[in-house]
Image (cartoon, rainbow, N blue to C red; front, side):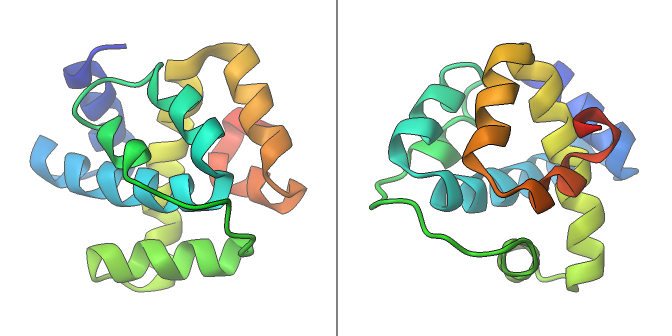
Length: 127
C-alpha cells in the first residue's frame, strides 16, 4: 500500500480533516506499537508499511515493553495531546489500516504478539 492510500484510509476511518492530521495520528500509534511488540516484530511490520510512516516503527528500541491496552491508549493520547477515549478512536483508524496494508499472515503474526484484549483496537478487522 502506498503512503497516500494508507493516509486516505486513516483519514476516512478516523474522520480527520486532513492527511496531515492522519499522518500525525498514524505516526503516534505506530511509535507506541513499536514499543509494545519489540524491535524484531516492529522491523518486520515496517517492511510492509509505506515510508516515511514505517520509520516510526524503526526508532531505536530495547526489548518489548509489556503494557496493557489502557496504557497503549494512554501513551497514544499523550503523543497526540488527546484524551484516552479519543485515542481509542485514533488507534482503531490506524490499526485497522495497518491490518489491511500488511496482509493476513503478517496481521496474524502481529496479533499473536499482542494479548487477546488488543484485538478490540483493530476494530472489525480483528473479529
